[in-house]
Amino acid sequence: MELRMDKAGSARENPGGPGKEPLWSRSRYRDLAFYYHGFACFVLKDYLAAGRSLNQITTFTEPAYGTHARCLLARVLHHGQEHPEAIAQYEVCSQITKRRKSKPPRR
Image 1 (cartoon, rainbow, N blue to C red):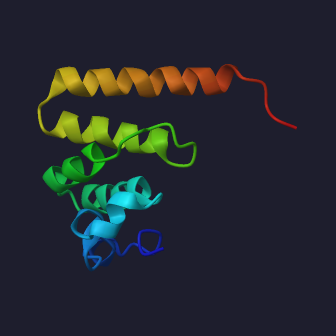
Image 2: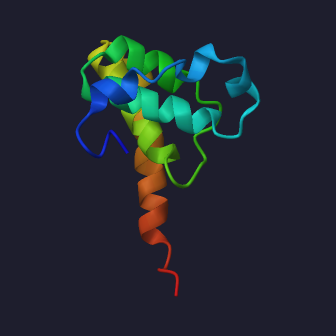
């Protein structure tokens, strides 16, 4: 919610954070918490922290945020001058987008 209200700083400074609480390791919302934390860090141009959070995501297959998390990770890698890894992530994002566009719309 704070990200949508342009309050990325307070969204990032969430007490505990996704990696500091032992309960997060067993939560089904663990990857979502890392995505939001990484997104907030990216908005604040803290690319190192964004990369740390986005690399913690175990799977990028979640339909709600998986592709965006992968694209953010590619942009973080690009900013960090890790071009081969960034290119690999960009290519996966491109393939996913092409696959989605080729599917007929749901009714």
